[in-house]
Image 1 (cartoon, rainbow, N blue to C red):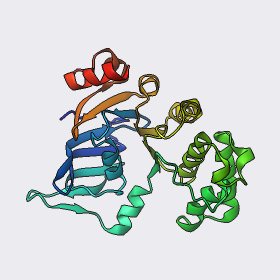
Image 2: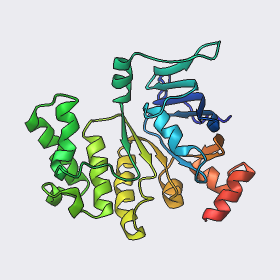
Image 3: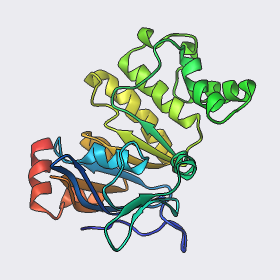
Image 4: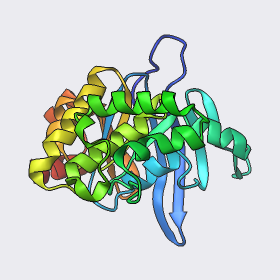
Length: 264
């Protein structure tokens, strides 16, 4: 199975390291030995047909799903590993929470709290989870709303926002926890085409600031222009992974080639 990219700085651990990750739901094998490394500041786009395991793999990286076998480490810290007898174990729950706090996740369907204003959505986790002082949390939230161009919406409820605005709020909310890594699970697939651009612009800006990002996407333009590496998954396997320019010139695998022809 391909193992993409080298570490970031010499001698430093990858920001994300997955080796031989397996995951099944009942008798259905969803992930079949997926291995991937993501270096500091790298943007990796994961593409592939629906049902290929892309979103499940992303969810396994921050413990929204547990793996059956394999190894997952975040910034050099082991989250889950498997012994010689095939037993997969996770670190204690307190360590799981601390390690997973290094990642922020943006979902396909926003997952904003409908009963909270935009500002309240952003400050909820910093107040409750991090124990941040309210004035500090509010200042951070206001700065991030300005960053995503939504300062004027701070007191609106999610029902008053467009889909693109909701997704930009969701990105700002994840950034409020100051993660080192951002995970995006098809962040534009629930949006009308005319609203996709504003979300992709925000993600491009994060990439320009060297945020480490792992993005499950169907947006081939984004993958081509913004990603350092494109990883192609099919039928639960990571079957091809190359620098973006090389991948779009020649994905190096017939299944990936057929997929690209269909998408482009």
